[in-house]
Amino acid sequence: MVFLDIETVPLYPSLENMKDSNLTLYKLWDTKYHSNRADVSPEQFYLEEAGIHAAVSRVACIGIGRLYSPQGQESSWEEEILSDLDEKKLLETFSKKWREILGGTDKALLCGHNIRNFDLPFIGRRLLINKLPLLPFWIDLMQNPNSKTYSSDISIADTMQMWKFGSYGSRFVSLEELATLLGLTFKKQLDHHEIRKRFYDWFENKDRESFKEVEKYCLMDVRVVAWCYLAMMATDSTDVGINQKLQSKIPITP
Image (cartoon, rainbow, N blue to C red):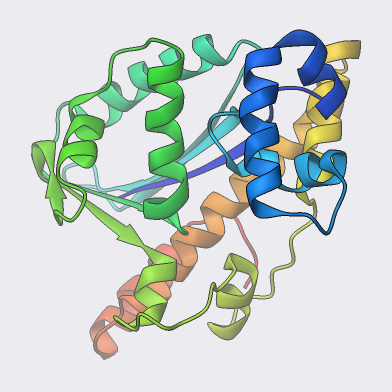
């Protein structure tokens, strides 16, 4: 079982900076602003919304967690954070890591919170924008979006979709809310404004220490997603005991 979370930031620290650096992209974003929001300023709209649009934002870091069972041994938890000021290098590193983790398996589960609507499409779009080859999994995802299994029999579990139980009218459920309802005391420590600020402290001032808080935040989301998935997948008393044992291996305190 592989658990994934990404943090994203706008490509430019401000709208004015985008205008000065990439006028074509600025015009595209300006069109989006005028067709969506007239109740806030263009700058406020950019700072609030840009980070979720792959056209005008980038991957800042990728958190990966893994629950696996070595032959003849108990299940173990491993985690890793990938980050780089050069997004292309970051995505190349991620692609290599992806092959290492999943390349030798016949069947795997990939899990995240809102991963179908955000993390996976965002990564795929940024791979294309950076002119990097799509891994087979992302090609499958692009061509067969409704499939339940993908290349190498990779299945996707989305904890937000799981919580909806097939309901189309359910509202967005945050990871913080889901964890709380399932019995895990968890509160988000950063918001997208703080993530953007810390990234650009790193980018402009070479303040690597500032961004480490974002990496910790990303990894905590990975851990909580894994905990929530296990909490929801216990179908009987035996599963409850097994999943609680697995949850105890994840470095968070319920």
